[in-house]
Amino acid sequence: MSARTGGIRIGSGLDVHPFDGGADRPLVLAGVLVPDGPPLAGHSDADVATHAVTDALLGALALGDLGSWFGVDRPGVADADSIGLLEVVVDRVHGEGWVVGNLDLTIVAQRPRLAAHRDTMRERLAAAVAVAEDAVSVKFTTTDHLGSIGRGEGIAAWATVLVQVAPD
Image 1 (cartoon, rainbow, N blue to C red):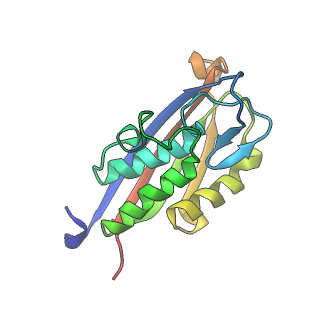
Image 2: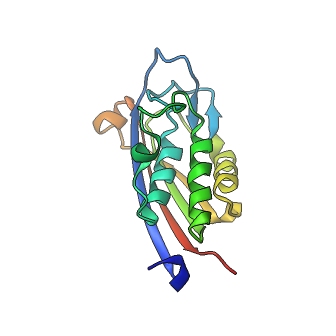
Image 3: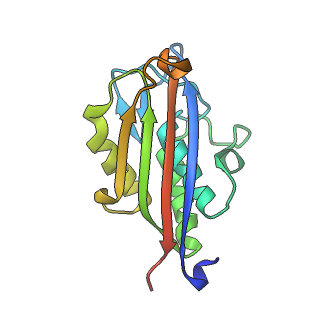
């Protein structure tokens, strides 16, 4: 179904990054600096939350994935601001005749504690995908010490987005 014929689409995204205590960068999640967290390993700013959102948007329109757009072999991606990469994808979504309806993000982390950053994350993501804050949900959970995330080895994020035909 194309934007010309109307409709909605749903996309999902998943990303996982390990912690990298030797990295010379801060922990960034959903575009927000988390000062009490160890940095994540990654080619860009390693913003696992924003990467999941970007993949969800790309998936909704069958436009590939984060790696096909911003792979490690692409010039300019090293240490890139992931919110800026998300905004590039949002521009394409709009160019295809779609807009984001809502976004649901779950960040899975045993550490650090993230609840104090929820409102800022919602605000930052809402601005990046061009929706009202009440169209963005950011949730946090742990794995109750199970698996690599539960052992505090990294952070995972799952995102689901709904896109709909842009109003005339």
